[in-house]
Image (cartoon, rainbow, N blue to C red):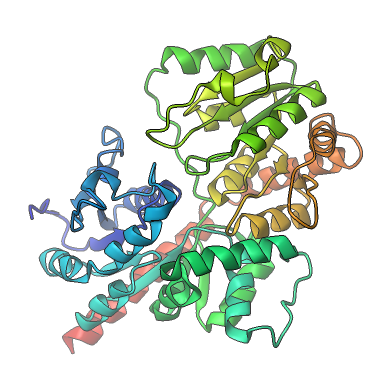
Length: 458
């Protein structure tokens, strides 16, 4: 394995290994960039070839090196599927098991690079153990919010014997059943695997949030874990300076012609795919709202889908001029920072929530699965979101109710004006806090590595 020679002998070598999902790789890469800017760290960013190939290497700092982590390839899981992007649902367990069994490969990477620190993610039971056996401190970096982590960790520890101390975070009955069913179908993503890293993290835990957003939940997670939980966020994907393609330019030009805060942006992340029923309900909701909208619609990789057939009959004609349908990908950060956007209807992926708060856009939350429900409750409790109303028994959407929530947020009425004000206030606080909090992160990592080196050398 070829290593770049670092000419600064005082630089600390950090190996970072995210889970194989876009929503994990992005914040890990942003943390790598922030650490590299201090010129105190040399970063080895380690992942599968298919994921490394998706990273734009043009603007990567020179003190970040990409390291290939090849997993065993098989007919069931070929190398191009060593990522959750486009992975069929029935192969998720296989990917987790394959990754979880890659300890021997990772041991060779550790021995070759000899890092001073390992920053690791979920589904890597071998990571802290292999690092510890080589006297390398290993730190867990959590890429989701502390409200969600502390909620699920609390229930894991107390198994129903003690109520979660914050009533704003909860699961509805159908959501809890949905999560239970997912866990039963995918044994390999059970709580033992999920919390393994948190419990084995060396002294501290890093998390992609900030005290302004989730202060009390950061503190409670510290209490639960008996470790200092240190916020490093919000980590926001940097907008590139490269020339936009024609499609993206058209989207921004379309927004330029709309009134301030008159549009709703709709996206459900890169790895959640709406069912036909959900697509139709959302389409009817947007039409009923009578607002301008940009809606990103995605289909699973390899699935031939005609956008017109997926939408209600005549929908595209009826919303012409008012709505733009984008297939596959849109420049989300550019859209959210545009003054014409007055609301973001999303699935509550944590990265999307942080981006929305960073750009000061009110949230209309429509959580779909996993930790998205608790992310949504946190955003509502914070005062930065309104959640769409679903049927309490089965979670089905109601187009009239969804349209009402969209209008209330974007038109700033029936509570929507309070959401807008809170988001603007929080955006200001987040931007004003500067890098002081991150300086503390850097100092803690330096201190931890220095003490470990002294201990090893004595």
